[in-house]
Image 1 (cartoon, each protein chain N blue to C red):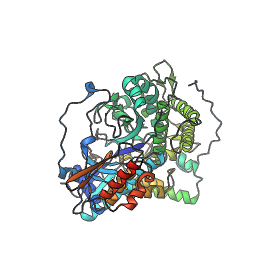
Image 2: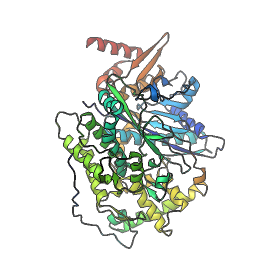
Image 3: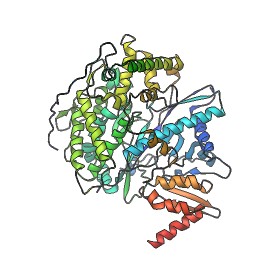
Image 4: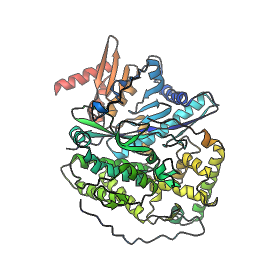
Length: 523
Length: 67
């Protein structure tokens, strides 16, 4: 039986620092984290909110001990913890991951909300840059929401989906062939709308490509695996569920691109939510296993119309594969016995129109866009970027080996302000929007109302001096002689409906805990 | 799932104006003076982005692997 598809996005940003040659990307990233934290009063005297790493187990594998990676667990000191992390009143986490600033959205139930939260993250990071610049005017930090640096490095835009424990164990642990026949073909082909686009190639399989659909495809090397920095898998098997393990599992996907287009991001998340729900409810009955999923992933990235070999001998275009999922999703949406993902009608509508648009799109072998009768270009990053690059290169003799094209590719993802090309395209109405500004603005300071992120965010907002540790599944209060932990093991509890009145009635966290206890006793 | 066959629906193709670049967004825009101006401004914006980025931008844009 499917569970609500709670979802979150973890975006690692590329960072560039000018004017302070001695400041490393790591230190610049920490500078941003703390500039924002100070501005929010989260570095005031008496506030010491630590991120609790106790529930992070990056070396544990869902497939068992045999796959576990044996390494020394790093201990993060308190001062280092504070330097790296800040938990925000909107339920999100902003921190330094290696040398990347990373913004992890709060948990959301709807695709629309998580895209709005992700976009709110861009606004928050812009604010952090302004604050850092005010503090050190000769330092210019620029952030890019992308996945490649053209020097052989890649960084992630990870997605997390809540799954039912039994379905997850059945499909991913005991019978992985089930996920290979259902989810993997969907993920391999969804890049035709979810790809962010990239000039050139960084893998032997795509070396002839002047332009690719996906940024991450070149870097994916396995179907299953624990790794995130090499041998990257389509399905990450990290056993770190951040929820009650008797009921829930987390599906951690690291193959996706960072989307700038709201429409592409909305469709990527929404369609994945629906497919996962169909898997949990055993609604997908066709075996679409690909003969070589990793090869197919790169193949689609190099040519979105290429035919993919299925394990059963058929060959299908990515569009045909996606049509099959869409048709099943349309049938599934008619079921009355399922709590469908919020906004399913809109997701199906966008999914259908995008596939139809791609069906009629004509691109030449030199990647010129010949025909786009259904206006799909403004909906998808890889096409909008391609349109822009074509516009530029046509004025320069039509070549693909211009360095400027890679600069424009990177600057498309610049979120810092004046040089952000996507922002410019959007402001000129050349990118189709799903959200309005108010949707985004409300998640800059307010958590989503319908998940545990509400409780977490409210604790940060109301009682920052009393919170001594926090993470996705717990909030801990320092009450002098005793520390009190509030577990948040159910992502669907601690919502605005559940606890708003408690926060209104309480002056401090001691009162809050008493109220929670008395409400629990009354049940 | 049953086998799906594609039936191409007849789509009325939009004419691409030859006076501008041969790609879809311009094609979908009827080339009013306002839109022509918008695209001109976009081209200027792009030139400005490249100039501000400078010659060393790509070389200096070195990141570490993400986790």
